[in-house]
Image (cartoon, rainbow, N blue to C red):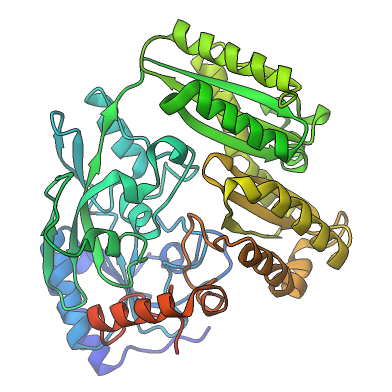
Length: 484
């Protein structure tokens, strides 16, 4: 890509931004020794944009001042946390005119209120650091996902991230009690109350969560904390069908109640990729069954009670034919090993080559029919494709991914067939009254698809909200809502 010098207007803006944040925290392509690729390319390396500058504010006042300066210059802003998103929602376009607002310097834990069971953190706080801060206070922050070592809570809120414990604790939305947000005009909304009840009008917090930085810039959040479980056990079960997995989920709800904190399903081919690319992980049971399920039981009493519950559940499941074999982790190390296998599916699929990813949600009761029908349609339309099916069955969220046929070039397959594969999958999701995005967001990748699958009245309301809060379309333009 050819480079060009900033215009006079951009030069003036950059000077203002340096005055606000300091020279060291306004990075451009002319900054010696700095490569902006870290901020300009998405995690999956699908898109590489070009920023006018990467700006790294230190506090909320600086964020507000940056936004005001950009608004005056009519320069759009792309908020960015850990840049671990999967739908191209946090990198600049190719114009070289956008500001990437990196929140990673704003990473402090501001307060922990043990009596109120809340923690207040800045948007750039890495999820793993938030978990550790809660743990050091003897409490639990339950949001857990594969990118937790690098993703930030601001990004988690922006996309309403899910993860592995949604079945018990809900998405990030359910874990948030308050927000601090900078508006498109550079004003600060201070809403970090930590209240569980507040009926004083529209719930602006929920409007911002999941908006992917298109309505305001989240700078801090007050999140719920929970007591640490007295015991946590993990079981790995082989199931003969997706129908059996759903039946096992029903039994788990009945026998474990609120102790059921995780319920993951993994297809045989998905696990075969882990076995192929990470043989040291020793994947259990996968060769003997079409599906495996990972169940987590977080007990409030003790380990003996938790183990008794698990054994009773698995015995009943075997009697009903829902489970053909199972192992229960005997230690925390074994449990972490089982979860590491589940979390390695994405990396193993990456090792296998480019693929078409889907993050969909379907009513749990309809998932067996959806998978059977859609698998058959894809096999008929694209002979030889390999299905990498896995995800959070407990909340109806599947990562329903399509790998190129054995021996075919994955990149060529994706380039030639991604749109057609998406059409098959999304049409089926629509037919089953599901959602084409469950936890990854819409970003740029799905913005053009939304008008095809979103209720038109809902879409019109979304556009009205965007126009009201960001009339000049300066906050993350082209994400969530495509240009009309």
